[in-house]
Length: 335
Image (cartoon, rainbow, N blue to C red; front, side):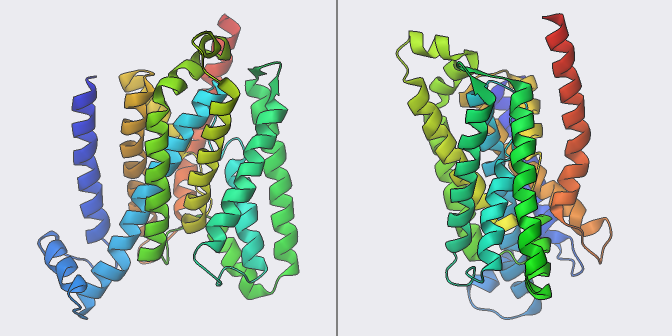
């Protein structure tokens, strides 16, 4: 498929799901009223429709879109570094590590000090996690898929055990807050949280786009990259740092949401090929679409009740992950 056509289709789909996300809910908003209500809110109008539009629906859709952008673009970058299409922030344990840092500051009562406390904690522990997993899965320059998965499961389990310990020692109110956050949800999205995730996801995407030629070489193997003068380890470390930064910012506002960085890059790679310059752009758009669509399902399937978006992405992602793992096993046997 032509990249231009795919981008145009994705942009149209993004506009459609954005409008649906804003319009549906316990208080339905007519499509023709979306723009007038948004303008009214920013002009200071306090009508119910204007407040719901400007203070609830708009920041929520912005957060959903940029969390999708961040997780999908980080997934593309990690897959290039690990040379494996199954390297996803959630699958390899990065999300678990970031969640540990976020839950730690929530349990310590520090999350209210600043809007930057949770993102900083998630980034720090996510960065430590990704370097530990990378070191465990790599031997003599080769990163094994099974070592990657096992390392991710092991580190993720360890992080989960520490989280469980923290929750068991905390008061009920703190435990409920942390548990709801861990399940992944966009409830309580604000313009502040939208600003955080939009800023870091955009920064990460721009960096990954600049690194696209290097990512192309890394995905072919370290030897190919070294042969043309690329400082492989330095570039890998930079990509890992920015991936942890992006994933940490996403986790801090949405909780742990899995499989976005696995599903979207794989689908886009099938449609347009492995060139990272185009893969990053289309995956960013696809990630935004998937997260907004998942949030629509989370809000409407059991309306007026609402389920966590992390449950929806897991239901969509687990079968896809198992199918991809099966495909990898068949490919390995053929080799």
